Image 1 (cartoon, rainbow, N blue to C red):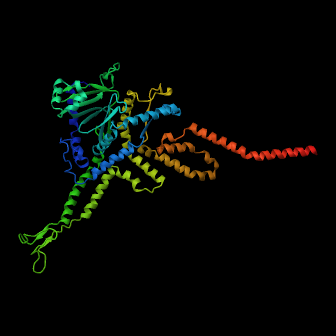
Image 2 (cartoon, rainbow, N blue to C red):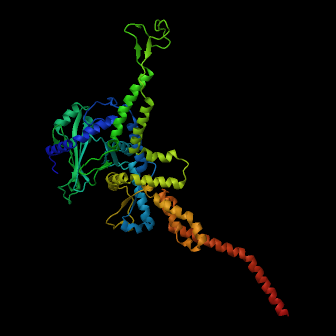
Image 3 (cartoon, rainbow, N blue to C red):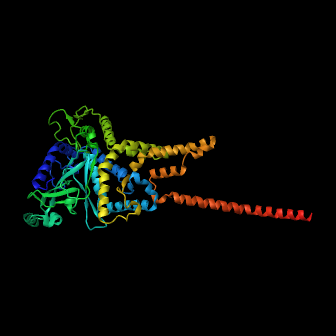
Length: 543
């Protein structure tokens, strides 16, 4: 990739032209699902009303709840939703206490970095989930705050109108252009002396003016591995000023700095498709149904008035308690009648409920609400529902882990290591060619393993009956290991679990106590037996 400004600007424009259809569709979706983000084909001023096309808010509310569901199932901020462990071939090393402690401490460092107040991860990730539900894509930039040991990472969720990407031969996103605007005062702080003299003067003259930039991240095709600066890094980074077409900030990254979320990806498309796209027919039908029901309801509540002829009731008043003289004829029959349309408003509402349910299903609300609506279910029923939930959402979780959360964690580990925040490696890990792999422990990951827990619990339920038939059945199931597996699936904190050595020590102590108790309880009998034996011996001798 050349660091030529003209080349970068042209390639960004080409990528933008390629996705015109998506931009148009995303704009329509935003109006009806996420109005605050409706700036794909229009550039409105801040605070502009964007809800004029929104008659029914079912989809907008469903998307908000979708974002909450995704956060709770994948990245719940109140839980340790992932861990670290050695690659599969090195897993026996976990039997070493120092090794296990290192992975737990490294995990804790990542969570401390991620949820530091200045890092702004939680709010930015929530915005990303909303974008995922509405547009099927999200882009989270993980920047490095050099010198800030308490919060060395910064998270920025970028609007999809700003980011344009391309993939490699394997379908992985490896090139991203972000076209964005920045006020002059902020550009001076960020780029400083890298700006041209002309641009600096213009920014200093009007610090609130918006200037346009393009930030490009792509594989460093001109990498020189022997170099320690950005030219030796695997990822190249260039920031271009669109105002004077100059490269103002060449640089690089040790790890891919973007966490890209794509909900569903179809063949030969680089951008994902969203729940809103799947529910689009129902969303649009709801908008029309709501307008129809509102018009019918308004006519039913405040119907048009039918008069015999023009001017017969010029002073007729519809005000409550009004006196309308001459509004009846000599026979007492009213001269004005409300118009009855015969509209079936309840039927319209019933039809809307059908479409609403389709929208809620697509946005995963019903999957999540099952547990809330059935609080009296048994533990086994809860596990079975969790298992079904895990099966239904497995494709979603798999893509988010591989494209979004995986690169996110890899980037954070790199930033933590560069800042010197990771604990010292124990000797067992010092020579490993591959240090870690991510183990997801989110509620959704545990839900996928619910079938294991169900199988173990059902086996434990039938075990007493099996032992009654054949006592040897007691030796078939490894009960302590079964408890460990169930605890792991249920998310019991590791610090609450005793390891094999601690369990062995407790068992040995209990055996010693039992033996001592047995000796103590048997002591009086033994003493009496010895006394009787002595008396018998005395009698024998005297005889």
